[in-house]
Image (tube, rainbow, N blue to C red; front, side, top):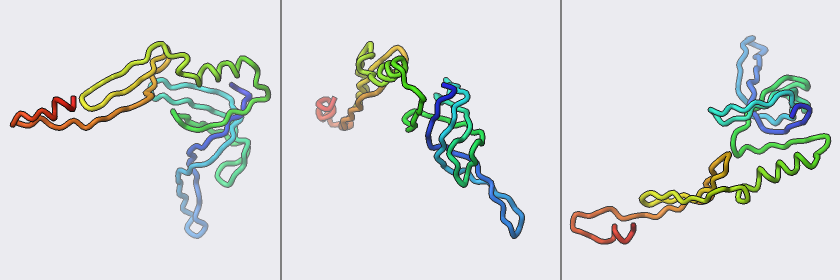
Length: 150
């Protein structure tokens, strides 16, 4: 939410100038930022959360107060800092992180040699386990090891 602070690792294009030649080069670097959150957008097509804000952690690659947009993807670590964590936010976090309690259906999806155990919720499907088994190929001579493998 706007007003919160968020810490994460992100990429930023950093420009450096060679003093002798005057040539500037730009390189993307991975940096750690603490943003004072201004806006939060979710891109459903890409599955990214874009958090725009101003930097509150000064480093050599980004100045204090510089504007930055961090793109948060699935399984990316981040820290959220609030002035006050009220009961509504804490309940929401607990509800979001306990997928097994919210799952409507547990499903097993099977193909030849592979099975996926999934939990299905109203918002997402989570693969909890993947099971693979080698299945021997069919042989012309009528070997039954393929049938046993299935």
